[in-house]
Length: 435
Image 1 (cartoon, rainbow, N blue to C red):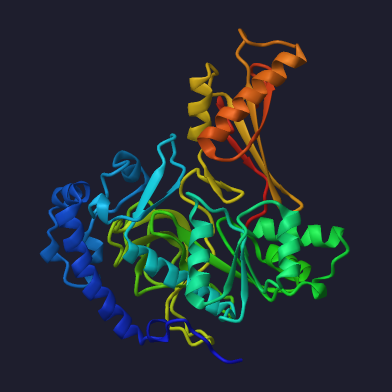
Image 2: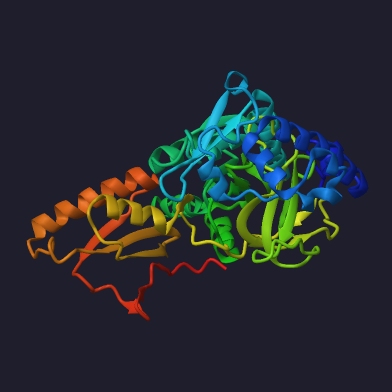
């Protein structure tokens, strides 16, 4: 098989040259952040670190971490490193208590991000002769915009479908001969089921590859999608905080995702002590953005647990690989590609006069996430009139949709009916088999 790269000068760069490039960029980036971001400058000063203390990536461990809490505290402009009139776009994801994470981009940032997504498309076999159907959500979510821009960079004919409207997705896929599908894995599986229901064989679909991310998925799910759509399914990883999808991507070997090391430095740390762990050790993934201008995060704790490996790859890329995330160090759930925190549910309940007695139940049925929230009524509001209960459930579901950006199914239950364990309610029941 012919090896193809979008930017071979970086994707196949000797490791020692990668580290040299990272060091040069890191020195400049630390200076840029220190001079332009008061919030991070204060963190560095508290730790007694100055820009001149950072001479190479070997000094990275001297810098303070950033966390989701910092992003919440600094919302909306506290981590902005460029004047607003030099920014051309924002993207956003939900925050833990309703304060959203807002990431800013200069045109330079957008260009580099699209290059990263272009690398992922080419690694999946994409060329200018392909038709790329982007069925990730558009808007504040980074999925649609990232793969859309990457598709343009490669020169594909781009179908900006966004998510949903499966009938139209299938029509365009077959009528316009889409060859690459970009969406969440659960939606890819649903499209596969919908094709089968319509009596359409994988052989009748022109697709050859899919690039799927934004939510956890298993190897078993990968095999099912590949069989249902007649494709090879590739993983992609990213965070709104660091730009979006394309931070890392899978190649034909499919033994982990190559991290775009010319743009990001990855570390694995002990989540309890913050100590940097050696390659091959399992721990929390930390990213430093090397050349983002508007929203450059240094040592951002992703809360994802994984392993890094520099084992030689048959695709010829020298970029380090990250394994699929094996879990998280916080209580965040990813449901249908959306970040959901139990604290967000609590905020809605308290605002609506409920006690924070609830249980989130997540499952995966026919490759689609189900999202139920059981909420205890207070003794004062308890009623057995079904019409009143349904009205209250609808109101709560609407408020949670506003907070989360995703529709839960709310069930009001009798007071003290949610099982306690040693006096404390079990807040999350995740029945999905994701590992």
